[in-house]
Image 1: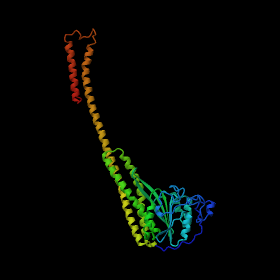
Image 2: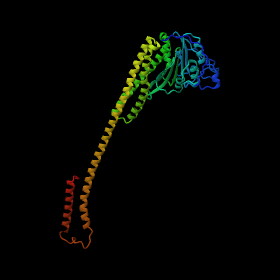
Image 3: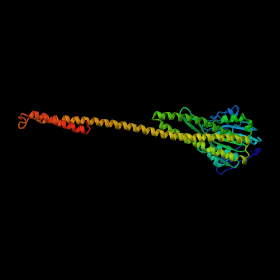
Image 4: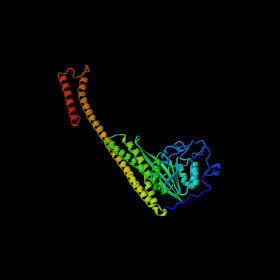
Length: 410
């Protein structure tokens, strides 16, 4: 790593991209903020009991603000020197001042959904590029790694598995890494950086390596957070396979929803492989510590493994969806075949009923004709009239029976 020098005092900077009011343009970044200032200070802020940096929960602003970051979005601000915690400033202005007064110090500032004024103040103090600041303010960025001069800008997509709804919740994390500062901007509940801060403070030798070591710890925490998601998704896929072969009609919707989550998961993990290889490619150029190189290679291995698992999940879900469609088609064909067979049997019964109805209709027709009792009917006084009528009925019925029998109706 390049040798870090003491931070000199900086005059206020003006950037054409800063959409400031006249009052903001004349204000110095290290000036004491007025009452209700966005950086969490002000006369109306209640005094805070000193605490160690790792004790601040990720969901609570340091100045007692809400988790949405609109008031008091500073989750944690701390100064370190030689891997040891030396101060916990309550405002950004105080952080800037103490960092200037601390030779070889490092500032670690954590924000959650910060306001535009807070990011503009940080940009003016640490020479952050306007494009990176715009990305951090708007969020909804893809994972990426970009270098602007001496500052590294990293976008990460953290994930956590929610057991109750069986869903994957994604958060977004933006990290600015400079020679003597590291700024994290969170959009969402994940990841829990308080655990990362505790881990680093418990390992002063690693923390003494500077902001790059903190970036490694954040990358490691994000990647480790993928493991429970992978386990939860694997369990969901196992359950889906059981439901598919059990014939659950609602499984198609579950497959589709999990496939969409895997698309998001893949978008979060796949770019990390290239990002970490990009970091490793700059080891020699930027003088990265050898021990830190080993740690980053280990994270890269884990990311590659996770990315391969996610690719496998997508393929498995596609195969399951194909199998489910095949099983549904087979079930529909079986049902249609059963309906056709039932219809065929019904037609056969109708044929039989129709044939017997026709056979029985023939003698009824003959008997009806001879039962009209007209005076001038020639067969009424014929001695063989009755036997002839009976014989005629028998012949007609026998003829119809033979016809229907030959055609298979009987």
